[in-house]
Image (cartoon, rainbow, N blue to C red; front, side, top):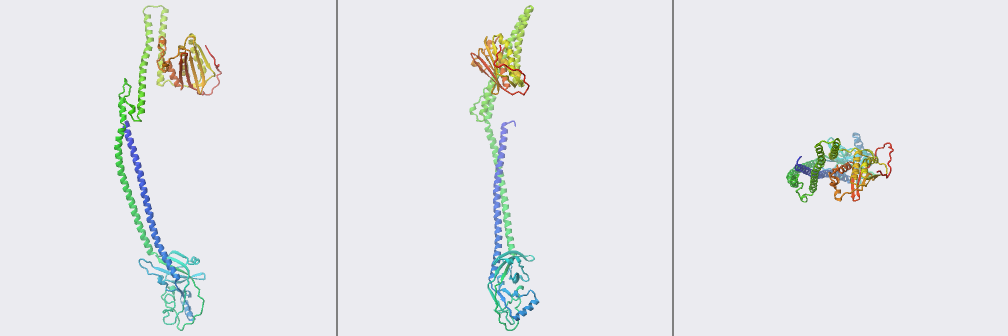
Length: 602
């Protein structure tokens, strides 16, 4: 987006929307999680209540069955005693019905009284007694409710400890499941009974088995079997309390109906709970949606207004910048009244405008200096040509005029070359091209180049080097740097002076120091000597080709090489120190050239 204000508004509002959506989602998830946890807890509570009610019903049934089994175990056990006549009749009965045995004439008196009648709230109940005879278990008595049905006695129950009970669910008949308890007990109350002679032996207080006793295994209903005649006197015998297994059972239909009703109640409560939780979540989503939309609308409107107010200082700064003109680079803005974020920008902008103003001034001055520098040799050239053309001259006079013209042209050529060099440096066209170079040989060649000029002025040029130094750098630019420094040392030196040119390697750098015994540089001029067209004493160079561009080119080349340049000056002379990074050159064969340490050349 081209508008910063619009970009900030859009980004800010998008951020607010995302943050609001994230908060809403997190809040919804947290609340939904709490609702689900509450629903889970309520669901577990409902299930626990159902399990408890089911367990209570079944435990009540088990307890009732066990109580009746213990009640049967505590009732009186009656054993019918037969004399010889009765024993004959009993043998006849055994032949007629093999299931009819003497063991079946031991029973619990009035056991059916414990079995209640079935109704809506009470299921049908049954009981059956088994007797342990030797190692076998034989049926002894059944309830009338069993009719022609009977229970089985698992052999594994034979080894149960006394008064131990076992519960199980068995199928009494197809479609009828019963809950059964099996109790092993020793019956202690034993009574003896003799069958009576007469037409109705099943009546009277001393009656025999009677109903349910003569054939207790068939569920009762038959009459006692007793021959006529006076009873024989009983023979004494020892009565041993038998071990019996008591099975009491109850139909599971009513119990299962209750459990089914409890299950339906549970399912209904769970469904209501699920519907209630879903309704709460729907209501929560609706409320959060309305709250989110209202909050989002308020944030969008408020954010737009707040951002406009927050960006007001930018509009103020923009207005101040629009008042800057080429004639006035002052920024009419008090940076201290701006926000902290904009103060550095305003200060940097003011500094940039100041630098721009200086640059404009330098450009103007450079244009004036170039015009001045070019005007002098051009004026000299034109004057010489006009003088030469006024009259006919000899060949030698024309040669002198041409020599003067060539000097003026040479002056202009050097000036233009330096200007082109600076232009290439400013445009970045003058690239850094490093190569392996022996700086000691380079320094010696530069000294040999300047030596004739130094000798002409009686100046002693001395080169000081401790060891050969080979590094990886731009040879041409380093040569230009050293040549300019040596040439300036000659130009600004005193007659019969001295120049010390020292090269050494120190702290990962190669240091070049050019010291002269010249006139020195004034302190106020030291900070300007690297500026273009600057000359510390222009009156000394009015008749020379120097334009104040050499040191500017030297500084630019040193920076391009990654080095530094320093200058120190006093009345005793000036010293320029250049340091460039030392880069280990690639291995190459020995050149065999060795420089003499601390030598001096004139």
